[in-house]
Length: 280
Image 1 (spheres, rainbow, N blue to C red):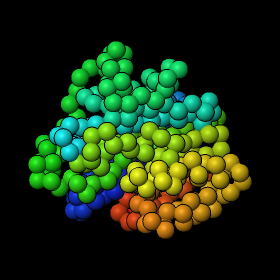
Image 2: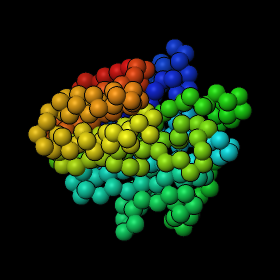
Image 3: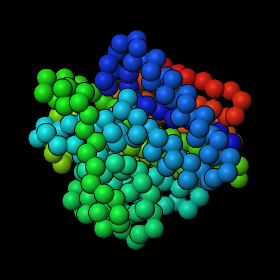
């Protein structure tokens, strides 16, 4: 059993040392709690549980604390993929729900498993997800001062359970000041993908990640016999011609963990029940 999570870029909200330390401590707490959860739950259940915790923490740009778009509204995206069943579900540009990852999880039971905009929000209301504003005073201040325009941040988790099953989940509050209707990578196979061989979650600039089909490429290459590192090296090399801004976490079916970013100041944490690591 292993778990790796990411909390986006440090620069997403602040580069101050205290913010970095706070994020590192939060990731340590969350990854260890989630590993305990993994002991008695599947990988698919665990990645949702982990991302839910990240959405609940205002330090991260997902759920509570999400970025505000150019029209003053918050729209969020999230996805989950079960590597065993090969089912992926997600919400794109959902509004006024506390935990988008839980709505994405509920959609796994539906025939239409990826919903966007008002359709996603209406589905949430019809399924008992009450109105909730994820805006925080800090995000409002950033919005009013036009400081959020350079933010990029997402949260995600990849897990392998005791049965060797893989799953990945990702959630984002967007990049801040985007045009309403802009689609992030988080609820696409470019940003969140898993099968029986590998699971991957991305953070960074969604347009760059989708241009490269990053998560799907990594998973496909591992499936085709690449080592996890080789799959990362080749896929991230393909971001270089346009200076693509991305970071990824992954676990393969052998339990190997890998992470990589194309630009510095991204935060990751992993835990296998014995060793805990935080990367930046």
